[in-house]
Amino acid sequence: MNAEAIQQFDEEHLPAVPPFETDRYGNRVDTSGEEWMVVDPTFPATIDWGLLPQGTVKHALKLWLCFSIRSHSPRETNNQFKEIMFTLKLLEAIPVEIEDLGVKWWKLVRQRLREQDSGQSSEYRMHRVRRWYLWMADLELPGIDPETALEIEQWTIPGNVKGEAVESHDKDSGPLDDRQFAALIQTIRRKQPPTLGQAATMLCVDLGPNPKAL
Image (cartoon, rainbow, N blue to C red; front, side, top):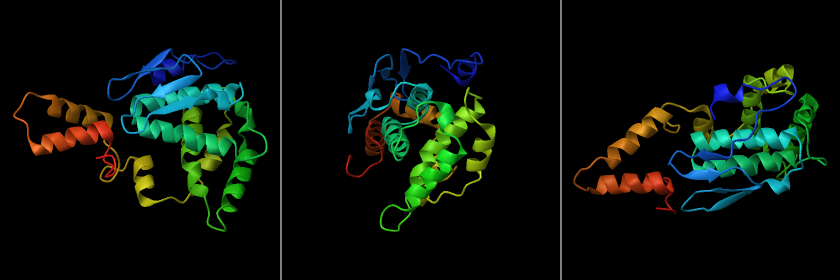
């Protein structure tokens, strides 16, 4: 399912969640049930949709995770789910419908995060949930408020340098884009005499460039 397919919906309903997605490594992920097994050799993870009540928020988040499976690493997909779930559960009531994610909700979430961690702001945890909302706004999904999207897009949300580089797809410090990643995979799979560099690159592709994992 691509962006063009996602946009083919009527005025009252969201598009259907596909029965499966294929991740960047070619693994097939079953997205038909309430538990999705994300394939990660170093950190096997199950995305449990039973943690969210039925509604358009849950459905739209499933669509976002399908997009993440195709475009990000398995670890990042799992992080997307965990961080967005954390934000959705931050207030007393979990939002059920997309309309519940209005500007009032965003301001309450930002205030709650600013009050956490003994005065040290946790606003950085809004990065992923904001990116999800702006993605929905770009696709004009039903229930999204364009004015809310415009306002939160202009917010300055603090974060660490590495996280900002990943989120902004910085050309020097950020992740490889799809074309670069495909070229890398093609290169290391080409028949050639084995080298230490090739082995290290293959390990990074399979496990992620995490020193502990390596």
